[in-house]
Length: 243
Ligand code: BTN
Image (spheres, rainbow, N blue to C red):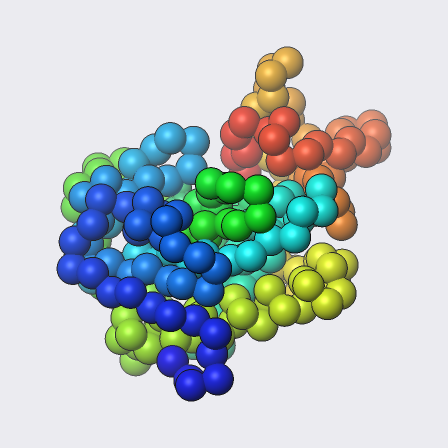
């Protein structure tokens, strides 16, 4: 990591979850482990975290404005997309809110947790050399690894450095200009891939609509078949499935 960086990185061999270690640390600390015994995913799922993958949690300061908690997970997902693009993988994209996909298969996932009002823990899991599909039989064809798609796979130390730099840049940009600049970047660069239908699980039931993108409040924008536009704050969407 370059010496101008704000980050202090703690590296472990095995932990339960890097997010749990990170939540006791102040902003600009990062925790990486070679292996997690109880890695967590979104929606209370477990996250298979064997040797060979990148398991990293970043502690970031967050201003108290209402929209920041809705937009930070999207901005951080976009930061990871940028890192992967910089490695020469141009087909990388986001699936709402912040899964990172290549050829519709999952390369990486983010779990952003709020343990207190003005600090976020951004947990990042990237499949690099690990093979989660050997553990979960449902995974083949659904996951992809960095080693499948880049000729020279960066070491975990190097990859961590790239992520720290890019997330710091994106965070600075958000502090300075808010989310709009990043949002424009995501939309302009087809950050979500081509337009597609999605299934949204809400408290009131399941809706099938066209995914249009997100707005500056971090709300999901959809259109139904008759052209009616809806906006959903992330907390209303229990599950989002591309169909
Ligand atoms: C998801 O796609 O469901 C999110 C997966 C997030 C996994 C990462 S690995 C590092 C950090 N520690 C955890 O326990 N989870 C996140």
